[in-house]
Image 1: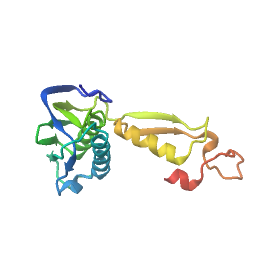
Image 2: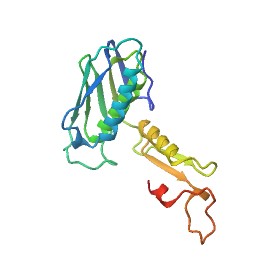
Image 3: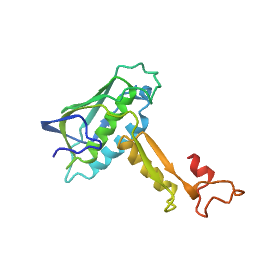
Image 4: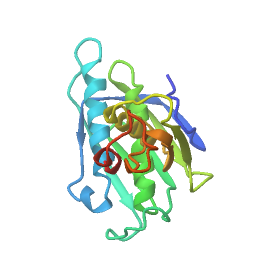
Length: 196
């Protein structure tokens, strides 16, 4: 079954073979690319997918290789290229990019594919993508219902997975205005909540 992605990559080519999911072997130098959150999310998704496989899934490691052309100390996250190439082969997964931003987008696409895997299997495939827009925002209206901060964190995690890189929050009476103004509602978030 061909995975669906959000947003849809420019090209997705599905091969005839597939790999069995179980273990992710992360390269030791992955920390230099500032992708720890994405690696953690991929690991959790992989564990869930392998655990939900019917029958017994034979343990087989997926070797993850990250190839980045940019210097390892580059920190221009908002302006760097998010172009990537993701290749899933029978023995390895390779994500190639010009900059760390591309590695993050490739890892998020891989996480989406792993989350949709059936029976612990992922199709071999090649995906090439780069965003049409550098600024991809979502508007969240907080005025209607006072959701918990845990709920908002889970929403933010989902937006990150969908490659949204900016959020416009509409607080209205949920913003912790000074009590002197009399504008904050009874269900307003605390200053600590907002800083998180």
